[in-house]
Length: 175
View 1 (spheres, rainbow, N blue to C red):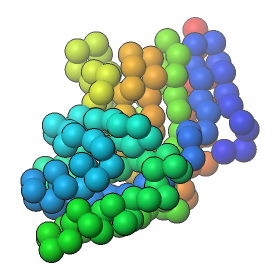
View 2 (cartoon, one colour):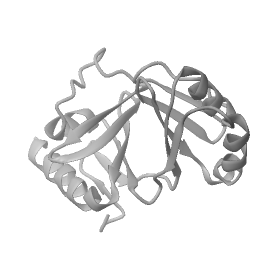
View 3 (cartoon, one colour):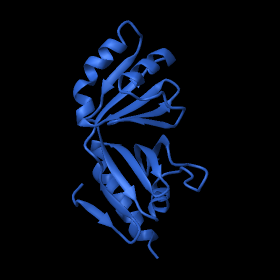
View 4 (cartoon, helix red, strand yellow):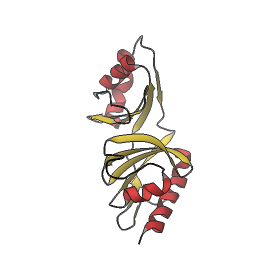
């Protein structure tokens, strides 16, 4: 992201936190073992669970995206190796593949609605929900952390494009 942040009267866009990212795929028993190894409960479909320094986002019936703070990430490989030994699963680190954006403010949902087909109306995409979506023409993931705060995961190569489109939408929707 070229600028450190953008604040356009009720819309704030900043680079997201530096996290280690892992995509896990496996059946329920494997998912329970993977989540337990980082201290998280298995999230419900399209929901999020958290523990100290670890977030588990359930993006599909057999898929969880783990976002780990550096302190947790250092010991996770050994924890997962023990917990998942002999259990069919796929676990891939995707830290270099994607980056994060944090979007917040009273206009955050309105601006995101310009790029995503999701319904951000109250009661539709509630805090604690996460899903894949399109952000204009780029694949991404949106996690609603609070009514006015969102965490976006986007492939690194698309970050400049998504950032520019969010800025344009913020300018275009300002009254």
